[in-house]
Image (cartoon, rainbow, N blue to C red; front, side):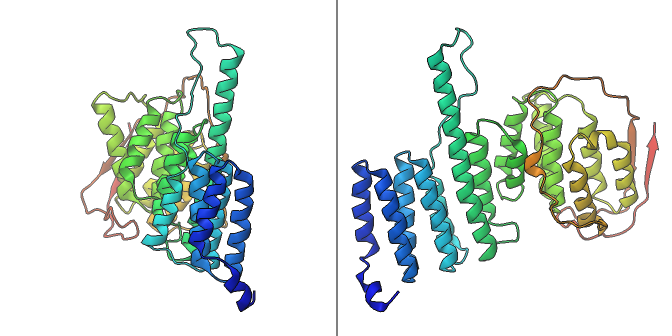
Amino acid sequence: MTTRERRKLPPAQETIEKLEKIVNEGNHYGAQQMYKSISSRYLAAERYTEALDLLQAGACIQLGIGQVTCGAELATLFVDALIKGKFGYHVENLDRVRIIYEKFPQIAVPQHLDMGTLPDDDDIQRVSEALGAAKTRVECCSTFLKAAIKWSTEFGATESGSPEIHDMLAEYIYSQSPEMDMARVSYHFVRGTNKDKFASTLINFLGKCYPGEDDLAIARAILMYLALGNLKDANYLMDEIKLQVNCGTLELQKSDLVQFIDFLLQTLLRDAFSLFNMLRQNYRSSIEREPIFNELLDQIAEKFYGIRRSNSMKGMFSDIFKVVKVHSISLKQRPCMPCTAIQLQKLGTRNSENAHSINSRRDIEMTTL
């Protein structure tokens, strides 16, 4: 673009006011095309800040009137502009992402029809439309926030991406998704910073999930934390769950899988790789209830004991979004397992906040009663 052509572009604020008027007149599609075409001209002219201003304003306006698809498209283009302009990951730009995120509609998702009366066709149609709209909101918001996470990894955040954006995505999926997927929710929460919100969300899920889903959700969350080397927050989450059970506010059936997680958390405090392997062997049938658990345990072995898998680590979490969601499980009698007592002699402990340091060797005796 020539210097003369750059000068022809009006100031961004003038364009924002003009397009807002078009949106308010009801011409959402026409305004959308103008947001996209004019912002591309700003980008071509390397007027990146003005492109960002225009796209942020457009996304917020469209989302604010319920035009979720249009707003999400502009929101994603906003992230593209951050990348093209090589804007760094810092508080100001994170706040701009948050402002757009907060404009995505937060609407209560209908979970079921009122079975007190026989639902008619209109009731079914309304619920169907509401569920379809909820699915669209989650998909649109997820696309925007995943793009923002990718931007953050490239321009200054940690390898996992912005913790704050991970928290946003986890909360939106949990509150707006018509089909609860705790695997996705947990994946983002463990990469976030809001452990209290994660704990309350998981406990809320445990109080209303189907039988047989509760111990899987607990194990998945704890193992995901541990696979990142985060023993401190894994213990915190487990303590919060036990607190709710002890207070009587949460019922949790005895489970071999939860027992395994309890023993695992104790074992990781010490240099006890042989015991780690024994636990995996003894609880193999419980671990194999979900395919991702063995992959997570392999990563935990590397983080805590420096033991690398022989095969490639590529795609470790590739199956995390393919976890089968169990909607109805008939409780079956599990085969009896030996009650394992672990005697951990006090010969020193591993620093719970540093999964990589091993202070000293301990004698750990496992006896099967």
